[in-house]
Length: 496
Image (tube, rainbow, N blue to C red; front, side, top):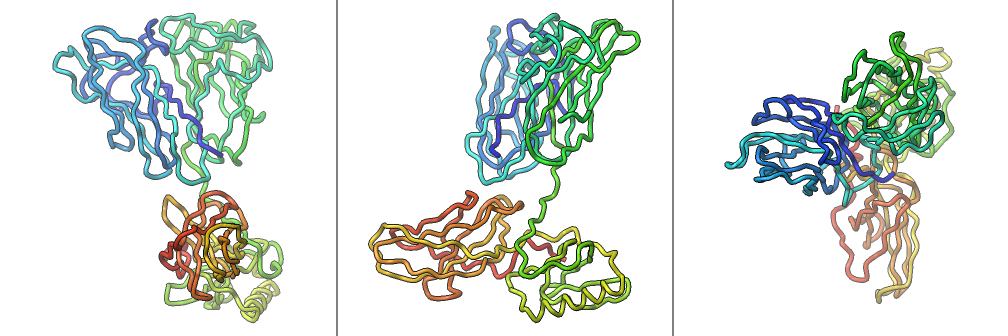
């Protein structure tokens, strides 16, 4: 999945660090002008929680200038990346301020907007702005997460029930919104969105609440996730409702429905007025460890074992049970039911070693001891399958034989597994070696590093990195890179 543009509606902020913020309802600004409206002061600041992928972004701040404006700073995790003097002797509306943001690592970040001083000619520290947008221009690695999702309600995919129309009935309403003119129970809009598995906050901007307002509910693929009573005995503008702890179990496309779900006993109708919807990620699950192709058949289903790694001076794992302890698991790496045996730190298990482990575990099964647990911290498996090798026409090199391996790699953390099984290939004269990775990157890695040996088995040296699933690397027509040797062990493994 590729990253999408990130739109931030000002009132959906996560933290007010300083100041009183609200909408001015400016008819001259596209978005109604969000501002530090009361006693604007130096240091006024608000922030938003965002999930950003490593890369470069173009940041757009839609704002205006006037004689009472301050100097604004935009920062990510406290590091300022843009400073803009908002002062002008007269009003200038709908200014598109552009800046460049470089994100050094993928993860949860805090984007903040702060007033830091003012022009000597300015009479105050005020700011007015309509939205912030981040557009990725170059991203590093994969896979990506969905990040913060902002929905403009007027851009709905389908009106399942009711008649809905764009409405701006109050000068204080931000960006207006959509209203169901039919005002009937069950009136419903549907939005199609992509969400990554994780935990989210849902925020709902109700531009106007009144005596005819409905109870508004939201659902994902038919399951209710949030309900808000939007009734108010008198008109109230720009209320933001929040629901925390929304869990999305699997990444994919979802139908997000917004609908009238009854009304307060004092309400006279089922009006649903929507100015904005945000789904803000708060956590993504730990990477799921892929189960590589096992070397030998699985043990009986339902068995679970707790496995502790030795220190670096040892080459196995201890399996502990309620009845026995201190049994060395040799170089077996086990996962819970159904259990499989894998290679450990780059060393293939001998069949005799597997028989020893199988015999030991089968004895445990006979004893009836089946209530054990796997260590939660087992990391990414080593690359195992041999690379796919071929050649294509090109260059003027003579016939030669190469030995090739590859590793799984994470371009953000720089962690790398030990290398795969080795394969060799004789490249004909006037042809170039092509190395193809046989599988998709397992979760936890976003690349594969290619190692080529020119002096026989075990002489592999680093050549290049592949960042496309099942991608290929082609030998250059000139000299090989011949960098460092592959890691001697999988450094995705945690230290104990």
